[in-house]
Length: 127
Image (cartoon, rainbow, N blue to C red; front, side, top):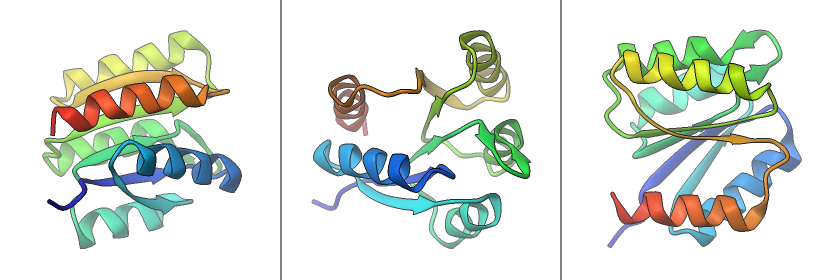
């Protein structure tokens, strides 16, 4: 059985690798992107099963990616992992739900490995 593909975007390479490692341990095949264009290209090239995104990225707004995913009729879970204030995370989460996305989290940075792996494992079990 093939592993579900998790497309993630984060502009911090160390954190992106951390998230990819946790997702691998939880049974995903991670694809790392570091900016908006890479994310959109990777998404269009092969629709992922799950998406993990950071809201705070230089030169773009993570909310734009939430809208992009909704415009693409993305049916998989969307996990927000970000260092923004909890209220901002919850607002983005609610927006995603209002746009018809299956939202998961949000997870605040700094991320604890055990909590992230547990969440990803539960998510993996639903796919």
